[in-house]
Image (cartoon, rainbow, N blue to C red; front, side, top):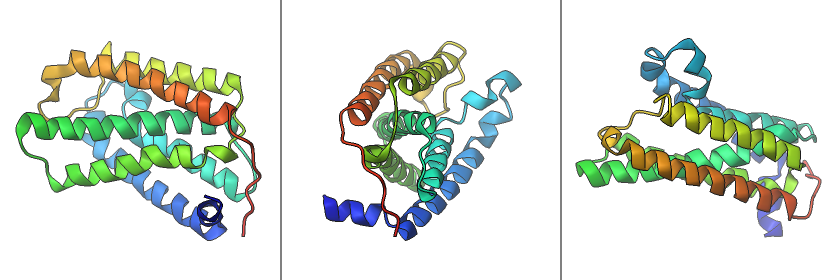
Length: 197
């Protein structure tokens, strides 16, 4: 494990990770453009879930590269990366189950979103999150669920609108689990200072 973290915290790797996440964030916002064109202005910030999660992580990595921490971004990142990473994996698998088909993009989204879910947790030993950061990030996350499933701004996935009540219920519990995960990984692990090489 120590060997793994020596690679993950190497400055060159962090730069690569930042570039990958920036590119993924840009791709994510482009993916949401058709939906954003039909979205009322007051909801726009809440619609692109996954790219906003990876944007939070971009800020986290940028801070780590400077030997600093941005605790609020860390809390937002670990919660939303896990939540929307797992959510997208499940939705793509559900799409395959419902339609019997998944495009190459769907398989790519499964892989990239699973990696997204893992990366926030992987760097959690270096976060400096406090309880109030978790509370603030939790409010953002649960409020986003209200926007998605009360005001019906959820991401559009093939025929899955037929199961939107079940998906909304699943998403609510996934949000709570993600918040608990954040608490576990940020309040119980020993803090370290990243040695940039």
